[in-house]
Length: 237
Image (cartoon, rainbow, N blue to C red):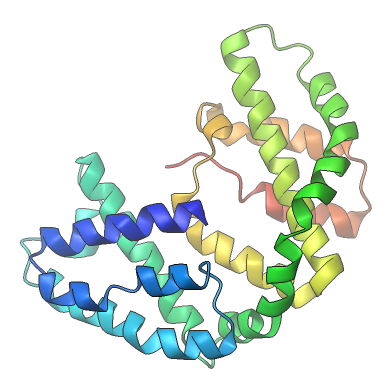
């Protein structure tokens, strides 16, 4: 949720940059925060109209800026790029999750109540499961001599396992639809989710994650699910 909160604040910057102060009253962050950014079916139905109005309003103002919002994402200015990427990514997620005919919307509203309960227990479960994995991570990294490389490598692998554990435990608790829905949301948010450890490694630590996947010695069906989760832990572009 920290990722969403940070980038919702960046949305204010993009609206102000384009003088779209008229749209600020429609800004939905406070409404989503009331529900811990996980509204249930009824709450989502109430939030979606205002949220989509905010994006429609902002898009009208952005169209009068010197450059289109999606063109701004290609500029070198880091802040402009971050604001723009946040806007484009969250708009995409909002429009899909608010579309009552979309697979994402249906999966979300069917799973959200179970998912909320799941969040209160998953950390302790995955923390316990990570203990034997830490030994495997140390074994994978035994040839890494450079301390500057050792820390990000360990952090990257730990994050990869935690993501895998999270999605697999979610399926065990709430079902396949809940897992695929969560993965879909995370894949949409992926451009905003650069991992501190993987960020410092060549190719986002892809080779190390492949070694960890092999070391976990999973059944093929579980291996595929962990691979999908591992791919969510990446460096920023």
